[in-house]
Image (tube, rainbow, N blue to C red; front, side, top):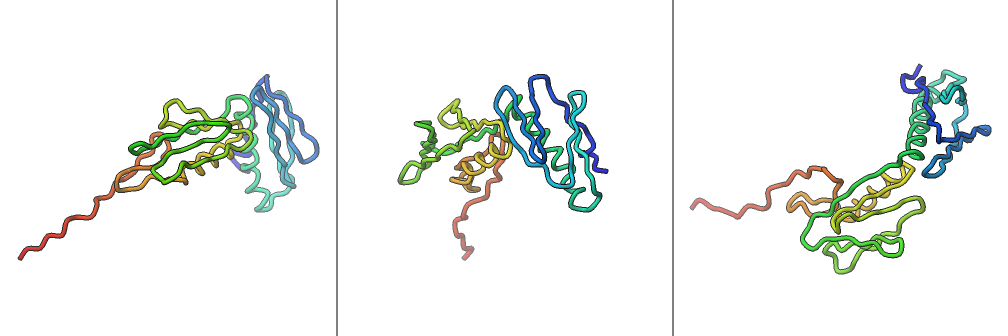
Length: 182
């Protein structure tokens, strides 16, 4: 039995769960999310706890048991608290601004980089060099943060670029001057 899969997911009072066939919808104060339950797994709701059960004991069903429970837990946490990823921009003159649901970044290129925000994602800029990506879907928040970071990943020689807040970038030694011992 999966150690993670057999743990029940505790449902807070302000969250509503609707199970219809193989689809699960969760509504909370921040929004609603939907998920399709894989075949071979079933959900049982009792006393504000959601339990994921499996019908078969084959390898695929066992591997999906813990995954499904983790995804449901992340959905419940997302609709109650939400998820946040923070990025920082490092470099002389590098900055970002928000206009009309677009993140505009000035990263030393010959042109500003425009990044359109997908539905369900909010961005805050506490400073021009800090980006906060927020939303209720953990996967979407992480994906958007990774796509923003991918525009200008931190380079190892000067450390310029976009990185996660607190991420350490190992710096390399640059090209050494040629010395000859004649």
